[in-house]
Image (cartoon, rainbow, N blue to C red; front, side):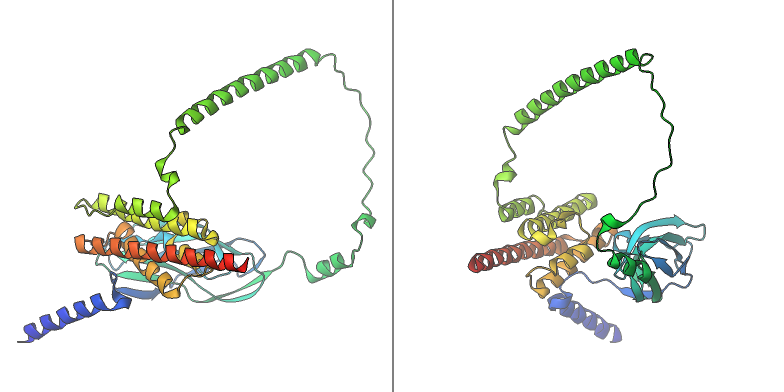
Length: 341
């Protein structure tokens, strides 16, 4: 009897999560864990000076498999990650080291680094450091800044006179033949280079005469064309991941052509894309839904999460709806600009 109630409860929970808008996408167990051995070489720096950091990510056992989602490695603004290195140890832990810096001066508090890790049992653990405080000094001291402000005319600054130099005679006779040879070779190299460039230009123009048919399509029509080429589910895992990448690229390219502030959308990570979109006149709910779907697709592509035909069809449906809404938002933005003129 207890088993029967357990099965009924599980089915109801699955249906509830499927039809709830917040949980309409693939859900994954997620937990947070503090990094205990986090270390820094300094907390007081000048503007743009590098800080070395180091910590380790450990599995529950030597046999447990896990994958670090390196693209989602983050540090609190205004700090930036300059480089990150990963080194697997013999105890199955991973040593993470790298460099960060800040181009904003001041007493910066609550700075935290975090990286998600996907384990073989389907869980995702967010490894985070404790909040850190840094002191970032400007390049010039206050005294130097005040001194520079007092200089009204830079031409009045006196420079030290150069040290006296002895004049010497350069004998061209011994070098004349070598100079002539070098000049002749340089002229010949320029002529050969120009001829090669002309041939390459002629070949390029011949190849471009036919033109790419996709270039004649508008941004939204091109999006629909790319979606048609990636909307069929395949039982082959690798091909499915390629099609998921194709769909996400289609939506990113549409966003890139619709909004100027997201000109690098095609090469941005999901987190960077959402940050850029928030600077545009785009509905926050739409941004949140795009982020949920893209994060879910990233788990399939990078963390090897499970996927079937129903889940794939949901991705296709959601991406198409997002494309339509982005297109409508772009039209409204253009109309508003025209009305201002």
